[in-house]
Image (cartoon, rainbow, N blue to C red; front, side, top):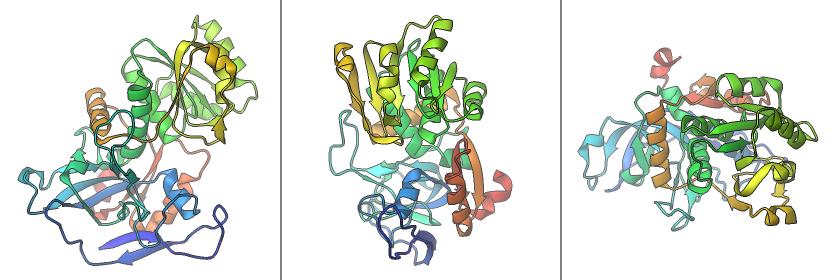
Length: 358
């Protein structure tokens, strides 16, 4: 079987860019509780790029990259009781160590792909997963390309919105950075349950996409130094009293931009800081009784709840580019770093499916 990892070269974190390396190895041997999956399609995340730049902890030069995948079950360990799993199309929970606790992982949490902390990944023909509890049925309305795009970003968006953000129908929600995978899922999920959703984005094209394709209610360009004031004008024109929930992946001065628009006791959920690795929190936020919450991915329980939501509302992940074959993975990384990209980048691993999938 083939898998794709990285090769070590000299360089310092942030400046080095590790080359991809295709590894040929024997098929995995199943333990009693494990399952063997044949990967149909896998998707990229910025996490994969950070690993290539040595900007991620615990990276390994022999572990396959990749956290997202849709696959078929082709082997079961002798201790796996559910024989009906064989030949089922499944999604892999992209982590381990977090079963159901709402507050934080119950044990040592690690993410699938590219590190010694969870030494396997989805950029491979086959993957051995240590327990059937770490896979879930794939929503039947999704084809392989769309399904592969869902796990990590969809889970992150779900926890931020529902578990921590406590989003409800009729709430006014601001989602920053629409165009990124997590933000786009957050818009789709919030709109599906009846929230009013406004976004920030980096281009008019992405704002138009959020409005026409994701059904957002409006948005502003975060490239403006006063984008919070721009949003205030939009709110006034639409008779919106304020923001009930912010789901933010930018950090920096994002909270200061929208502080005066936030309702008393509203929630601010931060799942990342792409603009600046800190978030300003002023006394004004204290006086407004804001609840600030940090969020990273989510539990297996939340993963299954997210899949139920996707199935119920027939949500379609947005895919910007599809690449055929692990041999063309470098093309997928190039697409991942395209600032004009709208949606996820997916690699069809099982090339026999390519003609029927594209």
